[in-house]
Length: 241
Length: 377
Image 1 (spheres, rainbow over the protein chains, first blue to last red):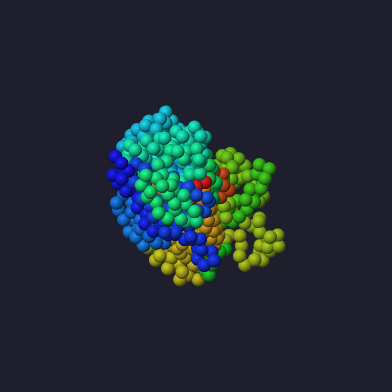
Image 2 (cartoon, rainbow over the protein chains, first blue to last red):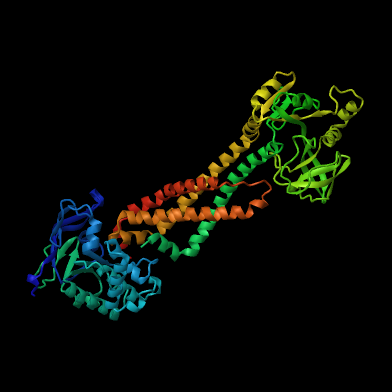
């Protein structure tokens, strides 16, 4: 299937966002437009303060834009205002997050960290744990299913975080510096894994990263500078800035 | 999955240590309640001990416990002759100090007429006073044992019986002796000048006075009616047992009740502040985890539940530990500590309300946290 045939999962049209007013006003995003299709693995690059994290937060429905339109998996989510009241439910069902420092809950063991999002989505405890163990096995971390986060290595913890992000079969996975805490070998393994998952689950992955050693694992790399977006001229040239 | 329980289990030692600290505060609150109850019970025990229906005291006084009262001993015969009175007895109450086991023993000496109302009931050991002189029945708090001898005034008394929990509102344990011995003791304890005047016959009142006369009334006759009759006599006042108990709790114990009540209110306020601070600190330590929960889609009720359940667990465990501590040490208090189940339950209710209110600060901080906080380092 060519990229053109794939469904657009994220449609960002003329999104702007600023913080502060007057002299202290900072334009974090200026008229950003971007389409991301299923199966794509996309990187957001840019210097500090360029708006990468803000864009990630807008796509994750964490930060409200000032203007523009946002569509997720075919559903209009923002058009001058939020169109859904239950954004947390939207995140729970459609978006998975992978953090720089895994952010596993320290008081839950590996399995329950993954099972939690399934229980929040309405699965029974038994169903949630079964699915969590299945995911951990798939990510080759099943042998650490009873370990507490503090007992895991960086790579193991990041794989558990990925399992958690994937638990509800989200269509969109947002990753903030997913390999920053890993050595180059493990970073490569994690990125290969994400690529594989994106292909298998027909999801898209958007990662904010500075990690040059994993640039070759992305389908598209978009550069942000002063809140403006420029694509790398990938297959579809989806970005306009 | 109960996140509050998991978080507590993860930091169990610290949580239990916090609960223990809080439990000491709860123990003080419960002790205060127990001491107040003990104060009331102690005050009433002495008044209830004779099993009286009517108390006859000196006119214009609220004796014999709230105020001093002194009436002629022969009043008893007049009272005994009243219609409906089945038995009457004279009693005296005085505080005395005696040397015992190398220390001073402060005693509440009750004089009564053996065979008449006024004798202590429910002896836990020994027998009632059988001889007319130099025998006494003591409360177990005196640490006296059967057969011990105790010097009161110029005479030595032998302990023949023991009662439990007979103390006055000041906490002094009671000893029961015969009325005549009590009158002698009263005379011996009077200031020397007064004693000399009495010995010369110069005093208006002799030594044959008592503090009160108590009467038992036929169940078919109203005690208030008997008291009304006595009130018509000159120089005497009368009140029913209910009136006497009401007087004791209102006038004798009231100030202590208000003082302890105020102290309890302060302690509960301190507890509320401590709980609020603990919960707030616990929440602040978890802000990034709470932001993560929000980010992965946890609804507010999950986050509020995490905080409120921990607050309630903290209060509940603190309350239970506190109750345990009080139950363990209450017998070592110098004053009687009486804790009724309803006292503990009411405090549990108050603590639950305090915990819910106190967790409001933590809940507010948690709900304000931006889920974006979870992103980045």
